Image 1: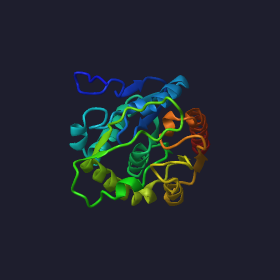
Image 2 (image 1 turned 120 degrees about the vertical axis):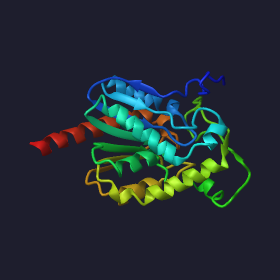
Image 3 (image 1 turned 30 degrees about the horizontal axis):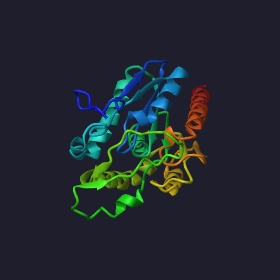
Length: 256
């Protein structure tokens, strides 16, 4: 896979689609890139929304850059993307795949003007990584193929993960668990019952601990972890658009 001059893997770049005053901020996951959520972004843009998907620091470049980034960088990347989207949009929804869902929840726990949060197999636990919590070596851990049920789908990822980055993910997930009670925005949670990376009960925990009065859960029975690229990706678009319409309608009624 060839690298561009700015060291970003071709296809892994951030993307922005200008549409109406309703914005959708989409965040990819750990070791992923905006490529993993591009289908969703294109579909939402076709619906007329303004869409922005940032590339988190250290992702889609080199493993050394990945190693040098931390979860505070990733939080700041998403916040800066939110601020950029807010320059174009008066109403914003945030969507995240896996760790992107974790970061979206964190953002929603701090900003009260996010209209809604949508998570796709949001990560509060990654059992395969837990064993590395106290380890100091090796520097890099071999990473298997992305967890996708659909055939012939290739996600841009590194085939090895820095141990330091795994520890940063574990810290982010632990911190985000403690912030669920600060979330009051409407939430739509997608979960794959057969997810080989993040246990499906993570979405149940989110559902049970956020303070949102509007909560929805949708099971993705034909997708594994990277559902934004899997067999149910169109279903994600369909339910998300319906959710946005319901939230907007509810807000209009509340104003009246």
